[in-house]
Image (cartoon, rainbow, N blue to C red; front, side):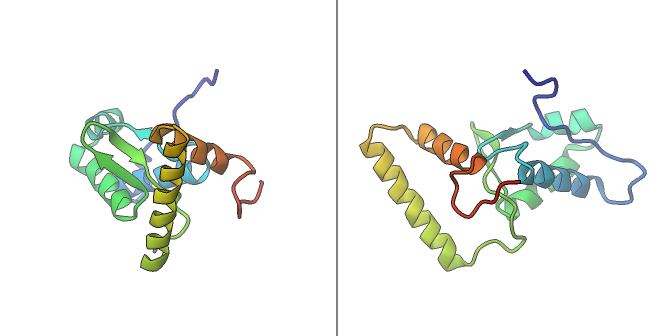
Amino acid sequence: MSSDPEPRITLDDNDPTPAFEQIRKQIVGHIAAGRLPLGAKLPPLRQLARDLGIAVGTAAHAYRELELAGVITTRRGAGTRVASLPDSPAGPPPETERQVRELAVGYLAATAALGVVPSSALDAVVRALQSSEAPGETTR
C-alpha cells in the first residue's frame, strides 16, 4: 500500500507562473511520468479549487487548457479523466487521428466478440502501455 496514493498538485506562491498554468504543468507531468495513467480520474473542479485555496474559475481554466490539448476529457456522470499521453503539444495530424480511431473501433469490436466489456478492454490497453508490451515504448 502506498502512503501517497494520488499524485499531489501544489501551488508555489513565489512562482510567477499563473496558478492555472502550474496546475496544468503538474497534471501533464504526472501523466507523462505514469503517476496518472490513462483513464485515471482527476478531482472535481470544486474539490481541486478548495484543496488549493483558489477560485473554481482558475481550476476550470487549467482543465479547459488540458481538454483543448486532448489530454483530459470531462463527461457528466463520469467526471474528468486522463484521455491521452501528453507526447506532443500539437497532437497527431487529423489523418493519423482518424486511423487511430478506426483501429480503436476495430479493437473494441474484436474484444466485444470475445465477450470482453469496454472497460476491461481499456484496462488491457492501459496495462500494455504501462509494461514493456507496448510497441514503440522504451524502458527507463
